[in-house]
Length: 202
Image (cartoon, rainbow, N blue to C red):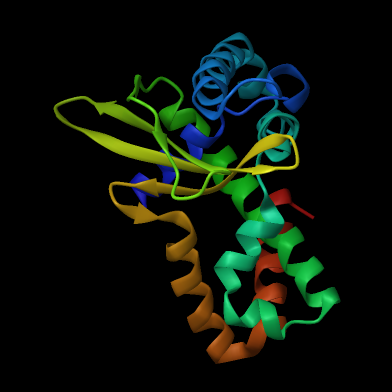
């Protein structure tokens, strides 16, 4: 769980598309990661006084740079193909909220981590890329974190993150498959919606 939390904070380094739309995936991750860390430091006291500000930052900064629909499709796999349009839309919304709240709850613990950027590696397809990084750990080996991006229209979007060889998408696919077997896709959507509401205090 701790390493999943590290992923969440690393993902927070992706800022507004309008600022970095013209640059490549490597530059996007590097520049935006540094920008986000600076933002967290600037608003440290505000976040302490108003914890909900973290959710606002995630919505403003992270959400525009993820292809949540594509991630949802990959996570649900065969269940996506069988789902209705309404189910797909509902799952994508709740999955997005799940990621947002997970990022937000991880910020305070990991905002001061040192990031190392490794040489760029192209993806398996022309419209894909992998940006490799490491997170330094006090008294331990660095944790490798790889971002998988693809070009959606003119913009680069993150669709998976691999931490120490473990894919975020694969992790959720395994977990959600069990829940779908137990309660169906509608059951999973209701469970996610309930958890999201509880976190938001509604």
